[in-house]
Image (cartoon, rainbow, N blue to C red; front, side):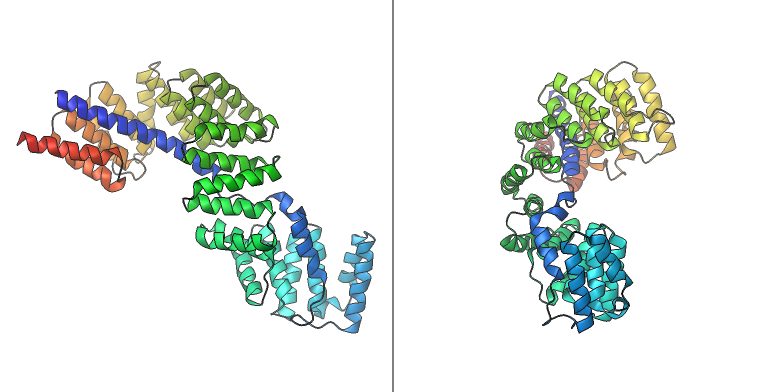
Length: 461
């Protein structure tokens, strides 16, 4: 009996650690999703210098310009120098020369791009390329317009073609890195970003891109240091602080993550997602009052936090026994009208059970969720734990077995089955359950536990 209790303490510790890592993992992964290009990038001096240079004619590698076309371009440049962009655009659009001139179509695209008319700019660049397929700057500027419009796969194709034709501009390399980053091609993206930094070393977007690549290539300390530079440049853009906080969490430096988020919080720059990440960190640091205040701030914003983040923080609150705050989170996230989202129903049912306020009612709600979806692993696990605590190991075993067939919960379900079988002194069955869990989630304390259980079986033979 003593051996089984000791074994179950180890397994219980594993489960608690696993749940904790799951919540932290959710928080950090959400914050660390590849950042979109900052809106300020398109106004950055390095980009403006690169883009404005594209108005210059490069006769060696691009379409020749007739005397008439050159004259029209000079007129357009004079109008732009006076700040009369509207007349410049009208002159290019209204000219009979434009329909057959790659150079004029290209300049029309540039004017439309600068006015934010992305669809029209993309069309103009594409028409320029139909007239002159090897027009290098048209390939590059088309890629810029497509990237700005969110068409990253299309942009990547034209960036590569521009580079094949000899483009080595920092903006081209930087956008190439951005497109690779969004595809999860970390090493290729890092190489492109570092090439961009050779000619544009102070561009914050390229530094942030390098940091995201380093994070995903397990060079997180270097990523944090790079983001220090970015945050000094752009303290008003909270996305960089949130990214740095997520990396610090992965490094186990949670108090530093709190500090990273507090400055943009004081500036009123944090969005609801980042505020709830900060609330989660305060909870882990046993600062419940601070966590509650940040939760209130998050829900006071016009754009509310996503459901997944709410559930993550609710799980942390329940793990710490902060039932009141968990209830507040569920209540604040509930829609004013209509049915509760499934995730909130599950969180609410678990809260009733784990707080002991209404365990039978919570169990009944879990049964309803399972009837609606028999593959809901989280509901199966929660009801299994309830049945085990209620003295119904047979029912619990059946529920854990169902949960072991669901990918999301399979490893934890096998661990729960191992706990149950150890408690029943079914050590060989427990060992098989642990081995199944290790197949899904290798490493850590579970492997050490398996070795201990193996030795226990050998000693008993």
